[in-house]
Length: 255
Image 1 (cartoon, helix red, strand yellow):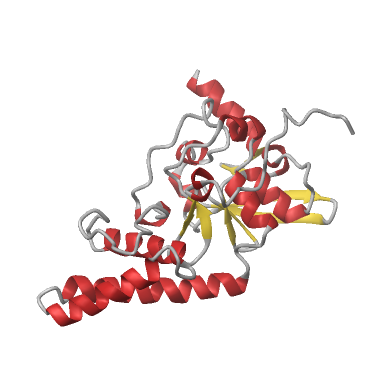
Image 2 (spheres, helix red, strand yellow):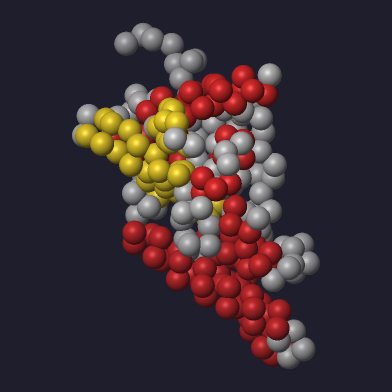
């Protein structure tokens, strides 16, 4: 009671704020994720948190049913985009495909954000940009998730962007990811916890893609106060370190 809230970080995104809604994207599997080209706020960097991850975790936005629905929608949009691009010479077919895409990506349509992201991903997969075929539904490619198409921006340095794992991953030997990822282990109140660090800087925990160690540790343990950087450990070249130790080591090496 009576404590100041000025130092608090609002963890949940506000869907009414365009800048918050614009942080969310979707990958080709139907998972909600943070758009990798969007910078983290100073507060997120200071708190080592990703607000998108926390919102997805707390509100269960990657529940199986939601992922399945999005995945089905993404497949449908992908087929429509392919039809539109391949059959451009057939005005009737092209017009049908374009109308279907516009209906799905219209801002008033259910799941329109996922549909718009799917359109952008499909266009990129076929070597096009969203600007070449401007959508008429109004959703555009604003919520496109680019992590799965190799077009994500260069990662920031570890010292300037602590919540981003991509710099740390880039410094690890490529052979460490020969099996698809590096095993992460930790121990919380519920017992041992496991996750996988992927080469794209994403942590998979309970099959959920998470952008920060702390969000992954919170999901694994249910502990809202856990520090993911000190919680998770990994073994590379026979040496086991926490993510925090490895990060500090890399910073020292860069210096």
